[in-house]
Length: 482
Image (cartoon, rainbow, N blue to C red; front, side):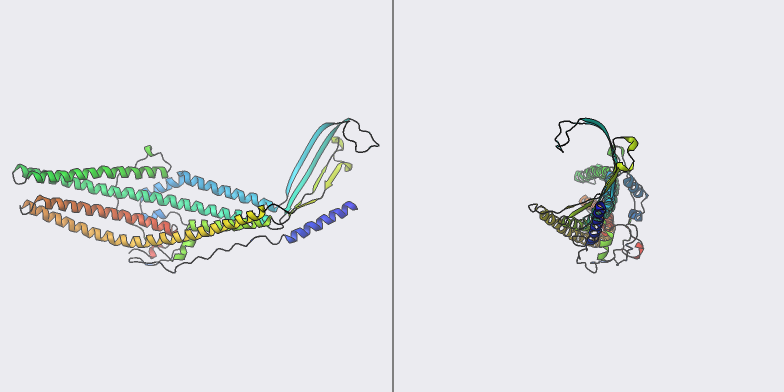
């Protein structure tokens, strides 16, 4: 009867504790509001688009229409150590969530003990009327032990809440790593292809300058030109050859960077020189608030706030009592034959309560630390959003300016060719000095290299804009450059 009353009391206490566990300690998470502009500073030839934020943001590089770039991107996604590490971190976060969720359920353990022991005859007496005897006996104990923490202050629930947000943060980090990896690879690839165009310009210039040197030498041999004309043309040719060596060194560095990004040793990797006419895709820019949904780094920073907010709840729950229910059921006997007989059965029902009383400010310091950690994540979230606004605005205005500059560079090349033709005709007719021809050659070379550089910058800025806006989109033909 006494045992029954103890069991009823423990059961009622546990039920009351479960009812009290309805409210979790700490603040509920709400994403802080950030000031967002209603529109970008759009310059011609842009038009505002409406990207589909629910679309999977993945193979954005396919929009450049370069099969070699597509193949390199696939190699990078398959072989990048950085991406493998990000995947492993996501797996770790999911494992932590599973471990945290287990706190909602009782923990059951099977304890088995088998021993043969000798009891000391000189042990302290427990009963002065009965002397001690030395005995040797067996002890067999199989028992089930159950332990369950009553989540009175919501510590377990806040821990799960934080672990779930951490999984989402790790998933966003993985998407961000994938975006950064593919964008960096595309940037290095387009930089290499821009150098290929410049090297092609220099190659054609060298061929032209060598013909011009032969012409100047022939005229000098005939007495129609001075040795200065030959020396000037030779100096221009030597200068151009020097530039070729400089550009080839730069190209090698980009080639090595691409090898590393694709998980390939640099000495075994090579990309043949090739001149390609690459055109940036049409990128729908949407509205500024889209970056909050599209950019994975913004999503990661927002989830970090949710993790930090949950940590406040965990720290706050430490001020409340810790209640653990620990029933047990089993048997104990000195003989295996009688182990499961009714007299051998044993059981216990108990509850333990621990309430902090004095800790010299440790719990309060932990709570202050958690609150300050949340403030850090809020500041970081706002910083990431502001940086996203800046990067997107830089990409939008940069694309417009570079598009106009590229168009003007083509006009400048046509004019420079016309100037060279006129200067060459004047020199051959004896009307002008060879310095005019040299100047015209240098002007054409500079304009052709500038056009190549501007086209390369236009491609790089388009990659930068795609990254700034958060990746791929659908319905991209609705807007941007015409």
